Image (cartoon, rainbow, N blue to C red; front, side):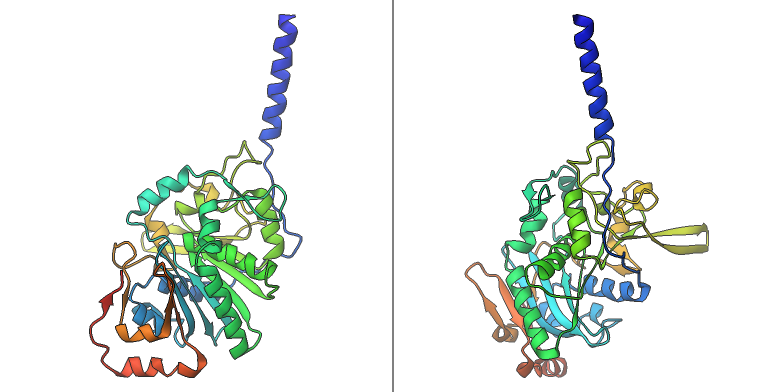
Length: 356
C-alpha cells in the first residue's frame, strides 16, 4: 500500500513537471512588422524629449533634445499628472505624417529601487474582456486610471480634426514603454482607431502569455527595442517552468548588441522571432546593466537632474493650461494660439518658477 501511494505521488509530480516546463508560445495571426532603423532613431528622440522637466521648453519644442531628428514637431497637448508623477505629450510630426504620442519613463529618485521592486512584482490584474489575461496593475493603472488617458484621447481627436486621419505612433522608454503599449491597445480596441503603431525602448514585461497573444493580434505593428544587457526588459522575471503564471513579452523584439574588438566595434540590430521571448535575443544574455538602460542609439534617456518630479514652467504659460483639484494639468496648444511658439522664442521669458 505504501509503495503504491509513493508511486502515485511520483507519477503526479512527473506529470506536473512535464506540463509546467512546456513553454507557451505567442504567435500572431498577422504578419510581423518590419523594422525601420530610421524610424527607430526618430522615435527614440521623442522618448528622450518627454523626460524634460522644463515645461516651457518642452511645450514650445525648444529644448536641447527637441532640435535633432524631431525638429519641426508641433505640440498639441502636454499632460502632466503631478499626483502620480507622470508625463506625456501628443503632437504632429509632419515629416512622419503621423500623430506622435510619447510617455515619460519612471521618475523614481533611485532607479535601482524601482528595478528591485519590479523584480518581485507578480501578475495582479485581470485585463478586461480577455479570458485568462493578466497584467501588471501598476503599469495598467498608470495609463488607465490617471489624467493621462483622457488628456491623450482628447488630444488625438483634436489632432485628427486639425490634420486629418493621420497614422498614430506611440512611443516611450522604460515604464513609458509600458504605458505606450496599453495606450496603443486602448486606441485600437476602445476607440476604433486605425494605423496605430507602437515602438518602445527598454520596456519591461507587462502581462502574461494570454495577454501578449491578444496584444499581438490587436496591435500587430509593434516593435520593442532592447539594448545589450539592459536590466528592465528582463523584468518582471520570466519563469520558464511556470508558463501560465509568468510574465511574457509580446513580439516583436529588436535587440541591439555590439560585436568586434577595440576600435572595430559594430552595432547589430537583430530582428527577433514572433514568440516575444526569442531565446537568441536579449534572453540570451543576463540583464545586469543599468547603463545599457539609460542610453539607446547613443541618445540619453531619463532626466538630466536626479530629482523626483521637478517641474519648471514660465508663469505666463499658465494661460494655456487647465488644472484639476489634485494639481494635475494639461497644457493645450490650440490651432488658433499656435503663435505662442514664435512669441516665446523671440522674447525674454524671465525667471521660471518651480511648480512642484
